[in-house]
Image (cartoon, rainbow, N blue to C red; front, side, top):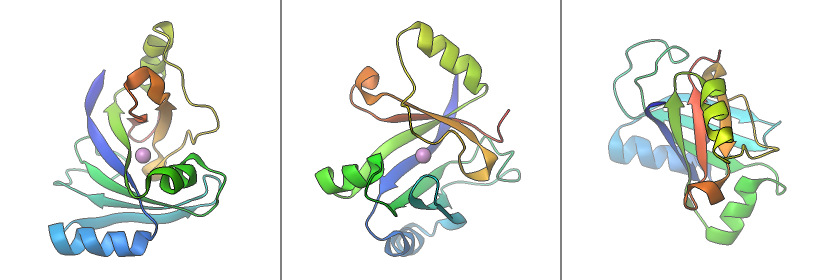
Length: 146
Ligand code: CO
């Protein structure tokens, strides 16, 4: 079901400072940078591996996702307030998101309500409840959407 690790989501207070850190220390390439008002986040994706296709088609690339909240009423903002900067979630690539959610739903794993269902690069995404996954907030990503 999982075809790779799409990204690691890292919560930060200052996304621009975090971008500079990853560019300087690891020479990562900034692949996308956008404010997503509907999700209350300023988001950057830095590619951590070779690109083999356009971002919206590339299921082989992995990214570091840097996330700065732009509102206080989001899970990301609460995470930063309670735990400080650090890894907030992991994003796995799946071939078929709806099929994966059906499989997981039958096993009692629920999607977190009020979390985004559309990601960067036109990806379809879903967040799974951390309580079902040993405390790890887990995102599934269907690259390029259905
Ligand atoms: Co993510």
